[in-house]
Amino acid sequence: MNHRNGRVGSVISKFQGQMLGMVGLLTRLGLLLVPTAILLHAALRSPQTSWFLWTGTALQGIVCLLTFVSRSSWRLPIGPSVITLYLIGFCWLWFGDKSEDPFSYLAKAILLVVPVTFFSLQTLQESGAPALRRAHLVAERLANRRDWPNDFASCRMIPEVKMLRAAIANDAAPALKLLEHPRPEVRVAALASLEFRKEWLPGQAELVLQIAQRAEQPAVRAGAVTALGNADSRVLVEALGQFLHDNSVEVRRAAVEALMWDTEHRWNWIRFAVRRILADPLFSNDGPIITDGQVLTYEAVKDLTAWTAEKGILPVRAAQTIHSHYYRELTEGNNPKVIDYLRKLVSDAHCSAILRLEVGKLLQTFHELDQALLAKMLDALNPAPLRLIACETILADDQVLAATLRDQALTTLRDLARLPNREISLTAADIIQRRLGVDLGLSMGQPLPPLQSRQAAEISKKVMIWATQFDDEENFVDSRPRSRNAAV
Image 1 (cartoon, one colour):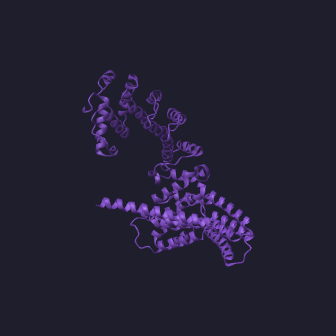
Image 2 (cartoon, one colour):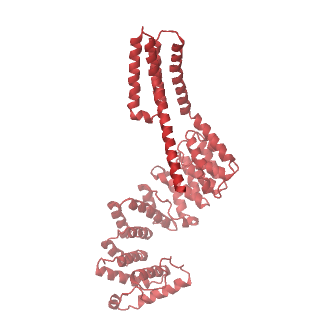
């Protein structure tokens, strides 16, 4: 029953839409045909100047017919066509009809008043006054709203925000007035309507910046920062860089999104602010400085690469940022030049270890570690984590790249498992259990246990036992586990 009612409602709605479209079409046709009809009637009642009026009627009809035939004219507003046809008809009637009867005066009045009215409406529309009035009405609705969502994020998604954003295309003043409202929900909604606004009148962007600097609520600060994301003033952009050090994660993410989307023009303005935030240990858990979907310029990547050679937390986060940058590029398509460059970084002994490790993980994710590079990565001169990546990649290959390469990977894995480093031991245990089938007590599909936990200590002991039980290299090669359920 409900399904039938839904179908009936859909048919009725479709019929109503068709009727409204038909009414609009007939109204448009009738409005455009009025000048031709007036000239035709004037030609029939004025035999003295009928040839002039008949010529005007014919030309008017041809112009009107061309308007009907042209497809583009149906997609454009009717105002310009009405103004043109009615003024042409007025000129023909003014010079062709010399009678002074009521019809002549009425016809001339219609042919003059209608285009003037349309011209006034068009001018009013282009002035932005109707949109400004709608913006004030929507802003008033927001200010008087009582039923607000429980969280600030939902306040940005209410229908009035979209309506206000469309209404303030020419002037942001109605939304800016809401920034003085005592309720933070109203301010968040107003700032959401200003997100990444391009056009600001003098002083408006500075007002939003002051709101960002003085607001107590993180959601208000984040909304203000996002609103200034399209600012092209160096003073404003550098001021936004201060919010990279905000105490709120939400504000820091908003600042990253607002600043890092256009590094082509802004990098020289924000590079020192970016360096400070990457080197600050208070924000070491924030990860890469760019968000998903953002791509850096060559200068930015060059600076980040140089920072990976320094000390502290700076090289770690810089390498993570480079990883995110190239991950986006490889996701969009395997560029051979980019892949060759990343392979050179991994094999370059002069490159920082943390950068080689991040790039190695990236190439492993996209299966771009070839056999020659894997053989180089197994070398004892390389960092242990990088060698572990090579071991896992080789042992995970079902087709076995080369028997000697697999034997080298097993030997390298045994050597790394003997190192007195718990982090390396846990990583080696994960590889041994997943790729060789040796049960070392790890929970499959779960993250590795904390380094200082009792479980991590027990697993490290098992890894050491596994590595030392093959004293003879030949026995080690021949005694590789053949069952995935084999015990230690």
